[in-house]
Amino acid sequence: MVSDEPQRPGRGVDPAGDAGEPAVSESAGMSGPQLARAVLDAARAKRDAAGRTRRRGTTGKGDGERRLRGYSGPGPDPRDPQLLGAVLDRLVKARGWQQPAAEATVFGAWERVVGPEVAQHSRPVKLENGELTVEARSTAWATQLRLLAGSLLQQIARQVGHNVVRKLHIHGPAAPSWSRGPRRVRGRGPRDTYG
Image (cartoon, rainbow, N blue to C red; front, side, top):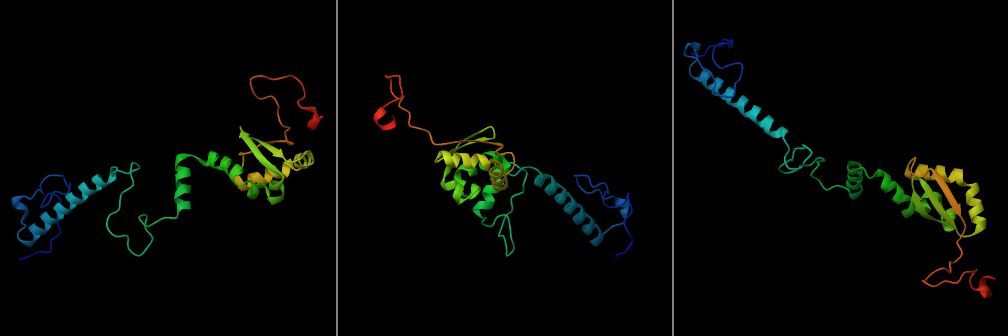
């Protein structure tokens, strides 16, 4: 006969749930289905405890993230194909490449950063320690860009982030240099063209 009497500590299955065999005493008075249910519950608790400790460790990814198995199903899942831009953004953030990526944007997307008109008459030359050197096509444009330096800095900060470019050095076009090669003659260079 099966009784509906609740289990009391000290009788039947050990409530402490040690990792060994379930402690069933002879005087528990359990028999048949009650005893089978108690042993089954103790075995499930042991399996669940072992599974939790095994899943907490790293599984080969290195960051402690659990690797999912099986099919992904109809909803969004980390195993689904990802957009390349989203994957690159996560990689840049994880590696700490935000500053170099922002600096590269200044050179790679100069027209988008400063606008098409300014980009048509100037080009970035170098960026060191937050100081951007810009070369203008003519001395008139160099003067104009010096007057617009404050607004250019604000535009650059809006596009690529703050503190990427803190100061602008703007100069006009450079004259060709005649001081190349191992033997040089002092002077201004050929006078028939630049005299």
